[in-house]
Every structure is written in C-alpha cells, then in structure tokens.
Image (tube, one colour):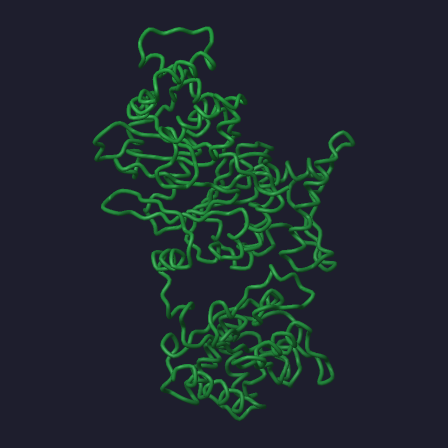
Length: 577
C-alpha cells in the first residue's frame, strides 16, 4: 500500500508570498518535500493545500470558487490572483475526454497548443485568474483555444456538446473549455489534514480533526486494536503501527496497546511496562506521525517540520514508512538535509527548493546532486560541518566528543575541531543502522543503513566495548563496523574497558564523578576495567562527568589510550595533507 498521487501539480501567483510570476509546482509524487530557509514560503504552500485545495478541484461551469481573504493576497499585487491546476500526461487526458480516435487527435492538438506545460514537465495545466471570490480560465487560454481551426473546432463542439448551440465563437470556446475542464480535472481530491510541528498525545475524546496533532490518538488506536470481525482491516492497520514501533525501538518483541481506561498508550519493552510519555521525545513524535498517517487513509496529509526532535535515523524510517505502508499523499515542509537523502527520494518522492527572492517565493524542482547541495547551502549547512569535512570522527554521543577532544588536545594542541576534523554522533543503539561499506552484504536490510562513505571517505569511529568481563565477546555490529573501517582508509577503535569512562584514571574518575554528583559517593563503584559505573547500575550524567574530567590534566597512560589517540591524531593529519 504505497503512498498515492492524487494531486499532480499546483501553480500560484499573487497568493501570500507568491508574486505576479506564476510558480508551477510539480510533478508531484507520493512524498513531496519542500525545503528552504525560514520565511521562504514553504508554509504558504501547505496553507493553500489545507485551506483551499478541495474547493479548487471542484470547478463550477469551468470557474473555480476559491474564497480568499485580504491576507491571502500578495502585498505588491499587480494583477488578480492566479491558481493553476495540473492534470497528468497527455495520453491520460485524451482518454478522459473521448475514446474516438478522430476526436482524440483534435483534443491532442488543443492540449498541445493551449494547456501543455511550458516547463516541459509533461503535465497539462489550466490557469484560473480572478479576485478573492472566484477565478475564471485565463483569457490567454481562451485566445489560444479560439485559434484552433474553425471547422475542426465546430466538429469537436458537436461531438462533445451535441445538444448545445452558440452563435458567438468565444461563447462556444468557453463552453467547450468548461466541458474539457470538467473532464480533465474531475479529480475527487480527498480531505486534507495538516500535522503541525508541535504534537502531543492527550486523553481527549476521539476527534479526527485532532488526531493529526496527537489529540484523540489514544481513542483511535484503541478502535484499531479492539476491532470487530466486521472490520478486520482495522487490525491490519494496528499491526502495521505495531511493527513500525518494533522497528524504531529495535526490539521485535516490543508491544504497544491501549488499556481499557483509555488514559494512556501502554508500552512493553524487554519485559518492562512503560507509559507512552516515558519514551524518548523523538520516539513519541515518530509514533504520533506514523499513527496519524495510518489512521487517515486516501488523504492528502501536510506535515510541518517532521524532523523536530527526531534523530536522522528516525527521520528516514518515518519517511520510508509513510511512503511504503500508508495510502496518503504527503506534502512536507522541512529544514532537514537528512530527509533529502537520495535513497529516500529515489522512489515515489519529489523534492522542491523554496526560496524568497526579492520578496517573492520561487519554487524549483530538485533533480541533480548540485540542486541538493544548493538546498543544503540554503539551509545553512556548511561544507566543514559534514559533507566536505577533512575528517569525521564518529562517536556515540556528546560525552564521548568531550573526552575525545580533550585527549586529542593533550596529544597535539595544533589540531582544531571544526577545522581539521569534525565529531559526529551515531547514537549508541543506532549503530546497527550504520555502515562504512559502499555495498554492504550483511543480513541487515541495505536500505536501513546510513551509508557513511557517501558523506566522507575519511572517517574514524570509537565504540564502547560494553564487555561485562574479559571473556565477553564484542557485539556483531561492532565487529562489522570495525571490519568495514579497516578495509579502506579509516580508523576503528573499540574501548579496552567497558566504556570510554574506563580510560579515566581512578583519581580522575572519582574527582569527575563527585564533581557531577556531589551527593553520590556511596553509589560510586570501584573503577575497575569492566565494572559498572554505579553500584546500583543506574545511569549518571555522562556529559557533566566528561566536562569535569576535561577540566583536569589528561592522563594518556591508562590502558591503550595513548596508542589509540596517537593513531587517531596521525590519521587526522593524514586527512589534512
């Protein structure tokens, strides 16, 4: 059940941030991404779809009946608002008008001379111009239609409108045009909903108008979970959400359900029972959007900035789920370069670059790597941030970055983060979704990997061993990553101890831990090679401990730290030659 295409293209002029020059946006796909900087006009595209689309696609006697407010008109309006709507390619348009081969030729002539897109996108466009109350077909379309050979035009009129006769050519032309408009654009555009950037699950009563922002979601999930025998499709949809939850959690046994009281969404992960609000914010947001996309069917769904609170892996998984497992068409505004990944957008997806130029919105399709780079530059991504950094050091999280930078500075003060190298986070348990190989052949699905070498060929990675004892085996994903990094130019580093904190000397460890947790001396375990950090096994503020350790003099004589840092520093300098 892949995402569908109900809407093929829209054009706007003199609407809000859109100036007098019409912007034709299309062809659309199942997933449509609008990327650009703040205040470029992305939200105005989604606003038009949500507020006006359904009425736009119900032409009355060839006119549109879109009701606009003064706020909808561009401030420097030089002519009436223009709304263009697009139909699919020529062959489909011909078949929708007539099946007679003789008249299909006439229709094709009309389409090519009157409505075929000047941008060469293969779409058929009709422009409607008017005020804030009604829009009629552009006079230029009427003029071009009247230039069709008189005899054939009359024959076409007799074929299409056999019981209607008009004396004036322009009236006849308008009648035929209105008829063609109704045939070419009979699109039964479904309902349009918008998922805002702020979303939260609540115990509000079921309300389809609110599910998109999390309100009423508990009720609707309960309806899907406790389906009747007459609605087995509800169970299928609930299982789809269930499987997606397992995927993003990384646990095939994870479960979600709605208790009888319908006061929360209950979660079960590895024999632990949790309420939905106890999940990480990113997981919550991902589930809300995926569930809304599943509950709504055969709809047009607008999503504002889905990347908010989402790790890049979750962003990719969400888009992949919406594209493959739901039946809607999606229009998404975003600032995230991660959503523009070529692997995501290669199938049933389209990207559009939205810019504000001289006070008006311009929209261009993104087709080439150069177009993608222009978007990244527009979004504020610098080459030194990631794409063209001389060297990238991948670590699990922010505390590891603090330790690594402290030790690199102790070994070689000339190296500067952001100039000679960049530190990026892979996110601990998300390691299974990374690969340094160009063509991984592991059992894990290839499409789930972030292919790191597409970002940069010069990479190093540091991973905690997570070993409980000396004889504990290193995890399979860590071994795979190490093999991939050592196969080509790169540095792979698995800690000699349990975690990176084991590289702190006992004195440094105690001082840093107590600086971060001054009242936890009784909970501090013996700082052994594979010992847990606290006696009670609970987590601690790793960033605070790392900052406290970085304020002390670095001791590189612990375990194999000096050897590892030397290898990393040598590699960074090699990448900067």
